[in-house]
Image (cartoon, rainbow over the protein chains, first blue to last red):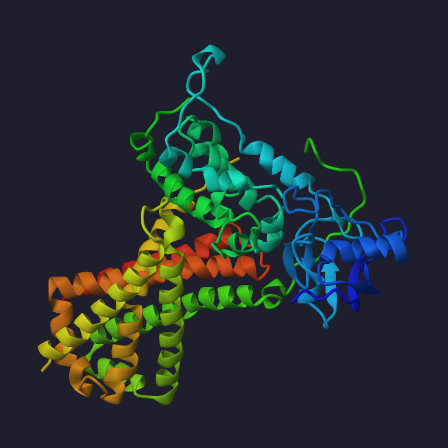
Length: 254
Length: 131
Length: 116
């Protein structure tokens, strides 16, 4: 039964102001909530009614824009996609996404990820450019199935916060970028293995992964980055020993 | 230099003790820790081989060491950890395979069944040969 | 970005991982627990004569070399990465140390097996 009555929950927020603070601190707020309120709505209540200085990112409120990721009781989650009722009567602790530099309060600097995303060339690289006049490039359901799951990524960075290898080494290309690398490699319209091989085969590519596997657990969109990365360890190994070129089904746009 | 690097002053949180902060990471570290015991076990076998090459007395001493409580304790812990390695190895095995046309859990079950079958085969063979 | 040589060590790690996942537990059970306690198998299963006969057989040699070498490479690879996980800097020198150790153990096993 949905409960329309208002209860009060304690939200503990990570606070950091680069202009005044040398180190972060935690601040607690008493937040009235109803059963239908998300953790994001709790944060919005704080900003509107209790403390206008609390800073955090959000946009769509419906788990598709990927802006509102936070550590909620130590677990990377979309704050619009987790509900205060599930934590009550315990306290909810909200921190910025792990493994990223903190700009202010709950806002992280995701520029490192953008650099990695650019290196994987996340767009179709065909062997021969198709003129528009050639019409749509048809795919069978089976061909689409090979990459569809990976194309669901919303760049919310929860997987980076779940990945200790990224935390230990920010040069690691990381789960989402490598999942998108595979998304294009696996597409029947793409022949870009060679264009992406340098980043795939590098220490900072698939070889920084130790298959912790938590990235795939926390993804709110059902993407399986651990699967993308680890099947490309096999591909990278075949490439290293010079076998892969015989196995690329569609040739290579070198 | 990064195209996107911001110039903002940021706070970077330390990584120390990260593996204690989530049960998922604790299980991961236990899995990785199995390697210490597997390596030591390989060295126990290597030591036995070296003793065998040295003299029958040296071999008897190595064989005697296996009967000590210290050795038994070590092997019990090694057995538990390597069994956990075995379970987790088959659990993550589908991640290294391309997309499968069947339920990936079949790989996990198949691997565990193969492990159980081979173990039984080795035990029966050994029992039969040394009977 | 520099291409990694990890494929070589990852392949050995993977082979050792499969082998130890399949028969690691039963080998530890046999040599470390069952035979010393005389449980499931008689205590003289690992008698000098039995083990000597095992290492004199070509298949016995092959089995022992495969088990020791692959277990060592699997274990050393994981331990090297675990050191990194625990926050130690693991550069080329650490890699040389760990993989060198596994190689040394493999060579020693092979040389010992050549005696018989």
